[in-house]
Length: 366
Image (cartoon, rainbow, N blue to C red; front, side):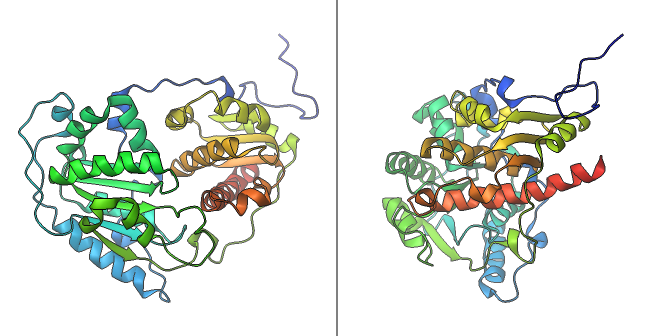
């Protein structure tokens, strides 16, 4: 019996064909959106004890101490499980005590804010269903799936809500989420957040706490800002990003790696436009490695922002990315890197670079 011919120029490869992200069109029910509001897999095992403060940045050590105390103080909080309140049952939650009920982690990308936020989630003495963790985008997607009032009912039974990467650059969604958080504070839910920086304030060597506290309007009194200085830890003492691989090597690796996907970059960008970003996590379910051929600069800002979300989901899940074509630091144009979403693009480059290093192990294991 003859086997299917190998792709041109790749030579003999394994019989099993790799997966394709472009062939996937996931549908995510609302209850999954609620159940998945936990720290992403990359942060399953992080704790305050595993955060290694930079000895040259005392604010990092101080942040750990403050957050440990904050978590310990959440031993008693709002009552009623999130599941019960999803259906409108359970007792009305207690009113919030006076004083700050939230913390805001204020620092640049790569200083470990998400590590600390996830550590706070893990350290808070409450059952997992009484704690929620998600990005700003995931929270707005939850409101879209459940409706505003049902989201309030669902999360009011929680003791803690952690919001990573609060989107200060989207005024409409900022007002929506600020209103939601006001309802949750009234219900006794403690809050913790990180954020990006407002457009026009990027690259100035400053932090975002003033912007964050202003944009959340009446909620500012409920937050204590913790400044976390430092450099992007993903680049501390690490080598430069590896150069792209050849098409042949990427294709061979995809066929030789169980659970790997193989897609051409341009068709993948087109496919992302047809899948809502709330489903990008489900898009990568079961994927052990992403292999891309023909990486090139993204053509426009909408495409670039979708790629940022995909990079975040891959990074959260520790999925290595092996690619041919242009290196990842050439994905975004100078105009994009100097514009209002500059911080997002630099975060994506940083994360994709880290995942590209991880993919080097795949090539070496063949």
